[in-house]
Each structure stands twice: as C-alpha cells, then as structure tokens.
Length: 214
Image (cartoon, rainbow, N blue to C red; front, side):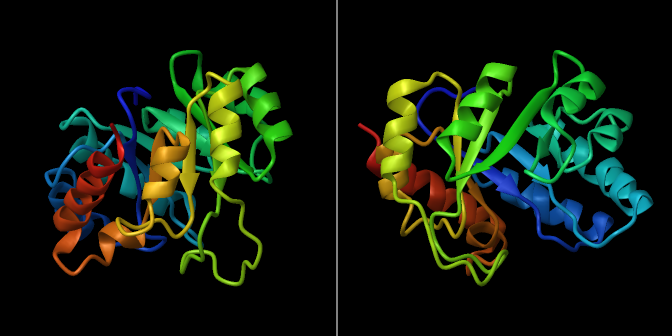
C-alpha cells in the first residue's frame, strides 16, 4: 500500500455481503484498474462471519498484489493473516493494535477532521491517517459538517504520513481532494453502485485521478 506515485484508490466493501458471491464482485472491481488496498468493513455481524469473509476475499486481493485490511478488529486481522487493520476513534487504541498486528503490518487510524489526532497517530507510528467525511455519504447519513480540502493541503504540507480522504467520494467530486494532496481516496458507493459495475467504478476513479494529477 505505497503512498506513491500520486493518489490511489482505497476500496471499502459494503457493510453486508455474502462472501462467496461477493468474491466475484471484488475480482471485477480489482480488475478494473489500480487499487491500493481493500478494507473489509462489515457491520452488525458476528466474528465468525468476519472470519469467513476474510477467508473468501483476502486471496482475491492478495493474488492481485492488493493489500487486504480489516476494519475495527486487530485480533481477527492477525488471526486471518490480513495485511493490516483500520481502527476508528472508539476501537482498539493504536498501541494495542500495533502490538497485536506486529511491526510489519499496516495500521491506519481514523482522524475525522482533527490534525491533532492525526499528528498523535503519526508520531505513534501509524502507517496512514484518514480524514473525512468530505461529502455527504449514504454509508454514514446524517452528518452536516464537513471539512474542506484545505485540511488535506495543511496535512500534506506539514507531515510525511500518508493521508486517506473518505466520505461520499466519487469520480465527479474527487478532483479537489486529489489536488489538495490526498494519497488515497476511500470509496464505497462510487464502485459498488456504479452503473457500469464495480470494474467501471474503479476505472472511472482512476481516470478522474489521472485528469487531476500533473
């Protein structure tokens, strides 16, 4: 999950899925163009369901040299040999997640619109920090206050830890975030709900990134 060159797609799964069937959807997405990583983000399911999803989907990503990251749970991530874990503000604290995952794994941290939280995470050793939501998102409805792309400009001008932009990002609105210095664009609906299918969604995002970068 290198942060260069430019900006890359950080693909997040839907919150509910049937692993065997979704493996084909994931393959189509990853075959649509460059993707840095896949984050498995399941909600309101038990640990065994998460393990089954990891077993089905991790090989699809890793066979294409795409990092596979589990949301929220470093214990299951380590157990299933995921490449990393992503932790939110109410999840396992970073030091504990790093201890569980080991030094070579990817550990990313949600930071909302807080530069101070991002600085603390970076200084602790996080591999990336995630800012957002930048736009209204069907994944997390109801939010009314959104940071601007100036947050990414500020971060990229002062820090070396890669940043992920998240929240309602599409091929149509991502240009300002790419230009502001986002290293990765975290997307859900832009791929899984794309009219040309998941491969078309990834292709459209990569084309939008390419139009924005020098």
